Image (cartoon, rainbow, N blue to C red):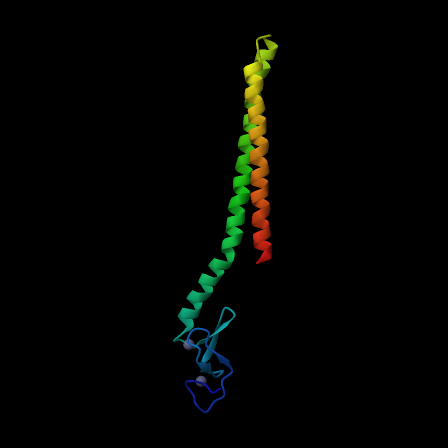
Amino acid sequence: MNCFYHQQVIAVGVCSSCGRGLCSECCTVVGKRLACRESCEGDVECFNKLREFAERAPERAKQQIREGKRVVIAVCIFLLIFGGIPLVLSLINGRDATFWAMAYACIVLLSIGAITWSQKSARQADDTVSRD
Ligand SMILES: [Zn+2]
Ligand SMILES: [Zn+2]
């Protein structure tokens, strides 16, 4: 293939935007891609930015899930600590603690469920990212 702009010159590569053959004089490298000097440079730069953005998307999602996991665990710890207070107070005061014991059991079960679930989704996110 010859250069699109210089028909007698053998092309050294192809523009990644318009697909035309380019000689060393006509081509420029944008990021890791070849582009027509001046005419396609902007397009390829845009394309590179989009690509970079798309490539970082799974990492961003993973980070959000990790943050979500942290929030879930923080809320669970908060509930486990403060949810136990009425139960402990009832026990100390010798009152019937059945209700608070049941309530606390629910909190414990919910917390275990929430933490397990968030860990599972974080692991799934890790799998998806590493598979790509
Ligand atoms: Zn081009
Ligand atoms: Zn040329």
